[in-house]
Length: 124
Figure 1 (tube, helix red, strand yellow):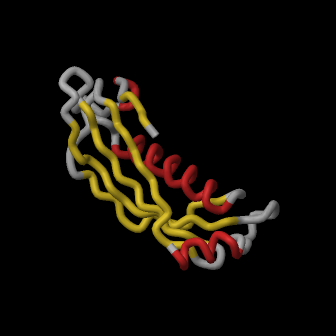
Figure 2 (cartoon, helix red, strand yellow):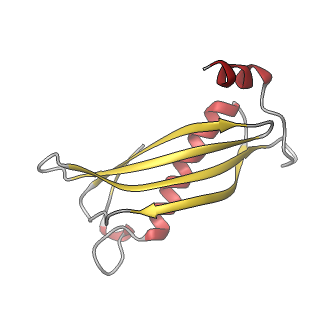
């Protein structure tokens, strides 16, 4: 997922506001978990998020999310972010975090993740 950082997303220092960064990371985690579960998911918690470096207005933030653990109805998603200076192409690591996502049914209750997905993770 890529997001150009504009002034309305920034704090008074001219860098991406932390709350907006968390929102973008949560979206990336949601997309990865939904793909894995092939159904609705919700966030149970964010385990830890580290802001390694500021992301300046005008930079491109690229987020990569990967499911790193699959349980019966939950999964862990690691999200990492790199900022790119569009003029120079210079990239640097800026964010990383881990999110716990839960597959849910139409009533919002946890549901089992398909057995086929679990077998693929176990054999990978």
